[in-house]
Image (cartoon, rainbow, N blue to C red):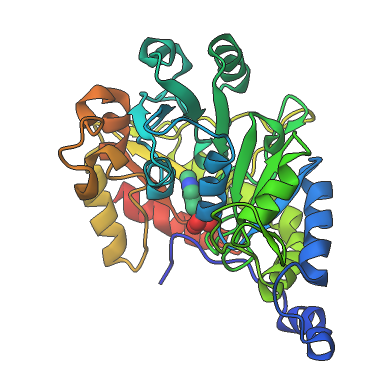
Length: 368
Ligand SMILES: *Cc1c(COP(=O)(O)O)cnc(C)c1O
């Protein structure tokens, strides 16, 4: 069996060494020593001035939105070609998603279509760096400044990515990373917010701990979204190996490209540059089937028959979710490029330990 991903784990002994001190301290959560160390390690790795860790990326995104003080019912421009989390976070914070279409070359928000969606109720943009491809961050910054909009990046896919010399952590007002088990870097479950305004550190730390600033001062109606010490220890260990893992992912990516690139009816999207100024993280390997002898669903089934799990990611569009049926914003017809991609895209298995022979086998099955 080959799964679409395989969670990175350190050697068993390495993790045991990392958690050993907890049997002395009995400090298991609430911003302990491991939590503090991981924050420092990540600030340095992500090259970012401010970070707050979370128990998962979704709750981090909800807090990022909450901290922007957006007006109740305000309109937030985003895309439906994403994971449930992005749209749900907007709706759960009492705001209205307004779906913008995507670019078909890298699946991120089509910045040419943003201005046409802005109304007097628009208060923010929540763009997604899809598959590790960065959005057009400079155009988004320009639009945000022109219309005074907040920008919260869903950077769940963009761990370790750099664009024009700058870390993916440092764009917009806030960027959310996910450290879920399936991501390039994991803390089992986990996430973080990165941001330029130092003043937000205290607010996020309060919000993730019931809004408690100190035992007698509760300043926000906060939830509980703290990262625990075992998660942080996993992160400390995994971070030591993440560069080597990305290098291995890159090898698999290259081989897939070599075997599938140029096949009529199979589109292997270009990835953003990976050079001195830019860095890609090889988080996913998306392939688009359009006019190939098998359609996307047939390829998915054929792979399954050979013990290979690929993922229709992202399908369906969040604007097609049953929970949003009947809502005035939920019209998949308004984003034809996103609808086109969702019907044809398949992400193939990609993880550090995926063997070259396995990549060849997967491609043989696809090419049938
Ligand atoms: C994984 C993911 C999230 C949510 O992160 P969790 O850590 O699983 O809560 C949000 N957005 C996108 C695009 C994701 O891929």
